Length: 156
Image (cartoon, rainbow, N blue to C red; front, side):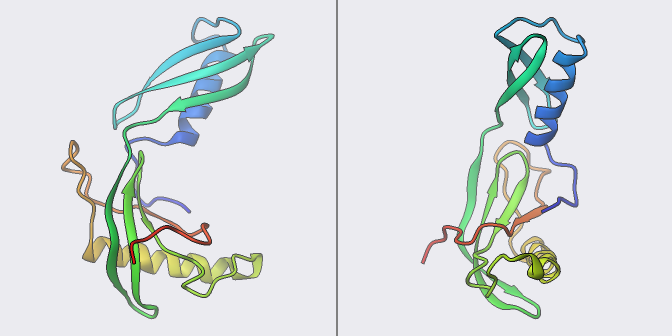
């Protein structure tokens, strides 16, 4: 999974930034926990860094507000057919497709086929569905697909 656009909030990037800030001393460190506020394009994000002996052991992020946008949406995908998918936002925007319904067992030998299908599904979702963010009207893109879940939840 990899976005084509810069997301308003990246959890993995926030974890990395919080770790660097505390371990390099760029912010005042308190043990057992240091709280760091990060300014992401989507909004402020709180990172709680569990510390021991000046090292980060664990980072917990309070992410931006997340929501499901469309549930059980019908999507026509070239070379694949008609799918029921969900779109959602959680710092980035996603189309969620059931990999089992696509015939994938999620084994390493399927990696290329999954990537190709994911790119097709993401492109179709952008063309046909988009995303409606209530407080960021300019963020209309579906930038990634969850293609690692064997059974995504969708409406019947």
